[in-house]
Length: 600
Image (cartoon, rainbow, N blue to C red):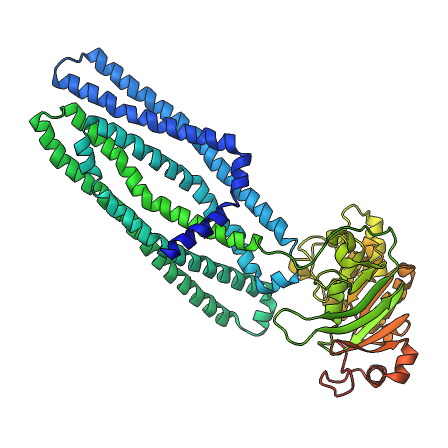
């Protein structure tokens, strides 16, 4: 019983998601339900017409024109039913599609507000399953499921009323098996919910497996893992089918059992109703009408299992969607202050940041003044360089009074307003299966072709683009598969430059570019930077020798800070890396015991 009430509570929370859609479309939904009721009322009149015709034939009091009139009445009612059924399908099923669209848009918009923490614990495959399979279940539940449910409830009540009017005792006999169906439905509902939840979770895993495999198809082929991946997918598919069969066993129990109850009721009516007819308690016409009404009641009884299954699936999926919508970003934004037009100062004050589930801080007691010019960041893998970039790009949350922009705590600023001041080139370059021009102008869709080409030239990629057959209109494939790693990075840099923002962060975004090209890009940036803040994380020190300030990160702390020449004299790690990079073609191994270790 406690599980049942807990399920009701969870269902209530999930259903709150669809209430706004019902309110916005209340006239449409109400009109649809009225059409359903009208269909049921008209259907209930047909047995009455048949009763009159049968009784008239039995008494030899009906004429041929009257029979023709009865037939035409039934035809007219059938045409009315057809028109009204089209109406409720258009209104109710149309509403279910509107609901599906609204939920999809709501979920997508909400996902765009969430931070990195959410996407670290939720796979892309799961989110894709929610926006496809789960939303489809919701649409069916509040489309055909809602129609069948409303139809079954009204038809049951009305039909029982007409049956009771003909003969109350026979009506009680007819419905005597129904409590068994109600008990079975209650027992199987919780099991249906549990098994459907598992099936949906497995579908999410299947979707994520396919997504990750196709996204890494070149790696799979390079390691000759096609057979192994196919085997894994086959095993997952078998498990998915097995659990779907277990779910179908529950669903399959409801529907045939409902049919059994309906047929049992028909048997009782034929036995007892036949006796009442023979004994003269009811006329032949009333018996025919009663069996017609019972036949109408058979559909609601059989539909009960189907409707229950649809709603269970819909509520389960709605609960999964609700779980995502209940997630909130950890990034605070009180929006009490507005940024000035120009941004000339970033300040970090005693910043410590620890990832969820980790004991060791990724950054610890970082204090730094960042002014216009180039700030170079070096350090070993895991020293906190990318974490620092994420925080400064406002992708990870921080405590109050730790990061300031123009002496304003970033937690008091609008996230959108803050990010509109920052252009960010991440380590993992993301390009879309579109043209080069569309990828470069992603954040500035109003940019002219001259502006796009100027940004590409600054990123040293313009000449290579022009050598392509279609130039800037060349399509680059999924994630830029047609380009080299260095080309992808430079296009991403051009995208950031086109934004023309006060702060530019390049998180090891030139690692796949040769050293000569990297130095050329850094030199070109000197003209772009002017009064801007430019933060560059790099494995290589040579391109950063002219940076205004360099910092060395070691285990989340600033181990050294200063200009290039100063660090050569005061920091052994920096001096060692510089020596290796200027004397040899290879860098020291990442497990170097030099203080600070190799850069990431």
